[in-house]
Amino acid sequence: MRCGLRSAATAACPAYSISQQRALALAVRTATSRGQLSSRFLSTGRGSTAYISNSRYPTSTTPVSTDLSSNTQDTPVACPYEPGSTLTVLFAPEGSTTCFPIEVDILKAFTPFTICEALLVAHNHHSLPRKFVIKFADPRFSDPDLHARGYRSPWSAAHDAMFEAGIQNAKRGTWPNFWQRLGGTQTPWAKRPYVEEDDEPMETWVEEMDCWDGILNTVQHEAAVYRVLRPLQGTDVPILYGSCSFAPPDVYPGSLVTRVNGLCMEFIDGARVDHMKIDLDVSEAEARRISPSVLDMMRRVRQFRVLHNDIYARNILIHRDSFRPVLIDFGGASLQPANETLEQWTETVASVNEVNLVRRILKNSGWHNPSPWPKFMECRNGMLNGHGMVNASIEELRPDWRDEYYERIEDAPPNETRVDSEGKEYRWQPLRWRIRKDVKKFDTDFEWRG
Image 1: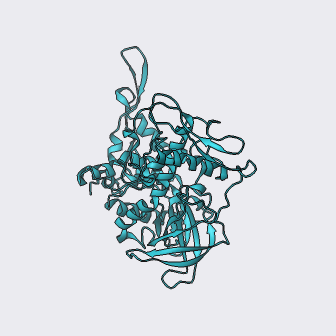
Image 2 (image 1 turned 30 degrees about the horizontal axis):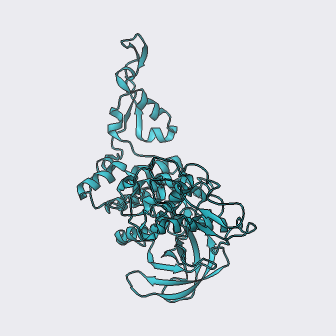
Image 3 (image 1 turned 90 degrees about the vertical axis):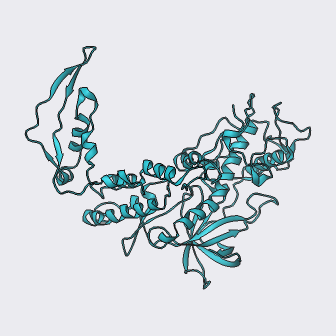
């Protein structure tokens, strides 16, 4: 077994491979881990200890210990990101090397928090709009399901003790150190050594450290993505105003969150597509007018060779006044990796085809009747079933949507019964539908190569 399961959160680090970067959007919400924390890691009384017994790595005769009274171990850490709170943050405008303190009032927390903590804040400083969004990367308050097993309840003093003990073991050489932020050499999971014996406390902590490292890296990575998309800021994606940092109260010295980094971004006064129900929040006619602009937005993002990797209706906002679509949340996005040519990366972006993913979202939301793809009409479900798959997919459409783009082939031949080499019978179907003349098709989205 490898020492340290590859946590999906580590994929947020741009230094990792593209496959690891893509894993963030796909797996971070359903990240799994192995085993429970061993009782060897955290005792039930005072003086919790952490150590390993694996002979592959050096062991310490003096394990790191903490002194936490049992009545405080399970007390959740107070969240400083509650509405009504006031934070003093250091703000650095985008493109500037200087920063200055500003006070912000939290108007709304976009809960439940996922990887980061997104907040709608207000302030009176002249350098920023009255309202904007801060996106902090504080792993203590991210979705518990992202964390290693044993760290998935609300973050508490007990978690602090366990996590800090592991950090000290890594820094002292008792446990392996795969992270630059801990003074080690940043080592991707695939290049880590194998460990023949199980050691649950070490494995669980390594997975949790991977999670923290990935979350803490999201701020820098997302800022890099927004800079690539600078020409689209203010139209298709939010404006990045700059970065900020905040010093949480009651954090022990040397903690990885002594200062929590974040991004300051434009507040989009609008609604998520998944919250806009047909005939309740938006008419079908309005939705069908908006959907082409949503697809065009995604095409413009694609032109910059950015893979969003988290294409869901919740990440597409519709501006309240202008009905302008805006794509948000680029924390798990992928940029061209250093080891791929532009041509190779363009092929990767084309193969993922996020424009078509948006098209499916709009279709499933009842917003959009997708234009037909002529090459799909040529598909055959094997020589024995003929065009049965194509016929079924068209016949399952809403009748008015089907009739908009397709017409029945009245003189289609009847079905045939065919028998394979083993004597099994199949119903072979001819193509029973064709695309109407002069309707718009979307071949170009499948054939795009920049």
